[in-house]
Image (tube, rainbow, N blue to C red):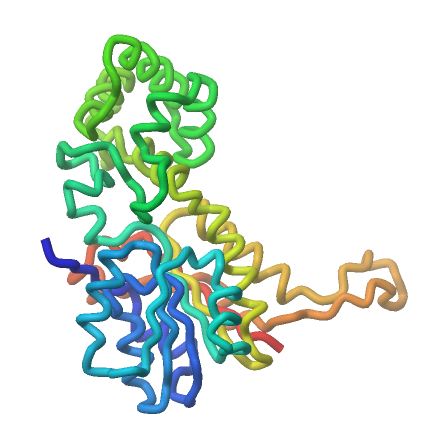
Length: 310
């Protein structure tokens, strides 16, 4: 299938990036190129360094962004290496960075990628198909204790222990190889009275495995840190996240960067010397409006935060 992905809150993202001013911007999660196209349209002199570890996304973006000519540089890499990529291109410092993290609509809707529990397919979930570790390798090799911790920490799954035990029992008979295999195990482990809830019983397990396979949370920590280091004074960073684990990382990183003196209140003068590195542009996370939600229901969990370096 062709690459299809609706960028979330493109208007808000471009406004907060300040893209009307000529500059060099980094789209660390290029996807289908939606946010990059908006940045390029905002000013005819803007340039974008587009990074993505998914080769299908890069190929789709190259096709979609052809009308903008050589104003885009395409790099296949993990955005955790953002600063190193930009430095290698001789583009430091940059004027803006955007990260739209998580899984794309294309990845969810492509059965062969194994991200979705709604279609039976090989249990893969690799964003970068060059890596060896897949979801199948994790569910078939981790101990029950390791699986329980994975489902609990990355999926915030209430029945993590029951699911982990059921998974280990099932794989002792034959390997767990497909998304359908895993869904059947989860449905068996989760009490039936919880099957009719708003979200599918396998949702959190699939989220947890995807995060683990792609090391998403550590990638986000490093990407946010490297992105801020790559910005010039006055440069801006926008991050769009899709669940509480991601948003917490972004919120804490931005709060720390924008916090000055940390001396106890009873101190008459500051002795720590800590100065804020940045200014928060969003006191609270920005969420999608109803019009966008009607067009793209997957935007309902999105939270956008922005910061400006000083």
